[in-house]
Length: 147
Length: 158
Image (cartoon, rainbow over all chains, first blue to last red; front, side, top):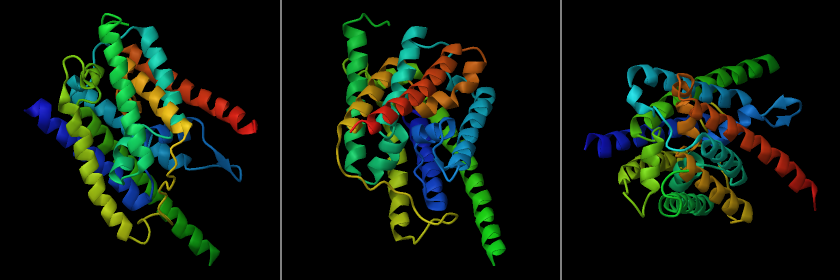
C-alpha cells in the first residue's frame, strides 16, 4: 500500500504543487526537457540568454534534492541499470532528441499540458506511452528481455 | 524613475529564481519518493504485456489533479505574482514533429527507464558509482544539441 499507492500519489502531488508554483508565481510551464535545453543550449535575444537564470535555478534545485535523497533515502535510486551501457546511451540520445522535437516530456506534456486539456499534449502523452509500451514489449517478447 | 523600475524588475527576478529553486527541490523530492527514479519500476509500468506494475499511474494522476486545480486559479489571475505575464502554449495543431518526437521519446523511455526529470534527480547516485546514469544524462544532452543542429538545418530548407 505504502509503495504502490501512498508514495506514488504523494510524489505526484508534490510534482503538481512544484509545477503549480512555477506557473502561479513565475508564469512558466515547468517542463523539464525545455528547462534542460534552455540551460545547456540557451537561445539569445539582444545578446542575452533567454530564460537562462530561472531554468538554471530550477535544475540546481532538482539536482541538490537528488543529492539529499541519496543521503537520507538511498533506496530512491537504482544500484544498477536494467540495460547495457550501449542501450542506456541510445536511450539517452532518443530521450534528448525526441523530447525537443516533440516540444516536451512527461512533465511539460504529461502533467502541465494534460491538466490544461491541451490537445497537443494529450496526443503527445498517448504517443510516448504507446511507443514506450511497445518498446518494452518488443524487448521482453522478441529480444528475450535483455538489451 | 527608470531606476525604480529596474529595481522593481530585479526584485521580481530574485523572487523568480527563489521560486524556481524551491520548486526544483519539491519537484525532485516528489520524483524521488514516487518511484519514478527507479528505471526497473518505470519499465514495469510500461510493461503492459508482461508483469504490469500500475503504481506509477498514481504519480501522474496526483500531479495532474493538483495542477488542474491550480490552473483554474491561473485562468482567473491577471498575471503571475513575480512576472509580467503567463507564458502558456496556445498551439493546437498536431504536426509530424510532435508525433515523431513524442514517439522517439517513448522508445528511449521504454529502453532506458528514465525520462528527463528522474535522470537528473538520479545524477547524485550516478556520480556515487552508478555511472550508466551519468551516461544517460550526457547522451540526453547530446540528443538535445543534435536536435538543435537538425532544427537549424530544417528551418533553413524551404
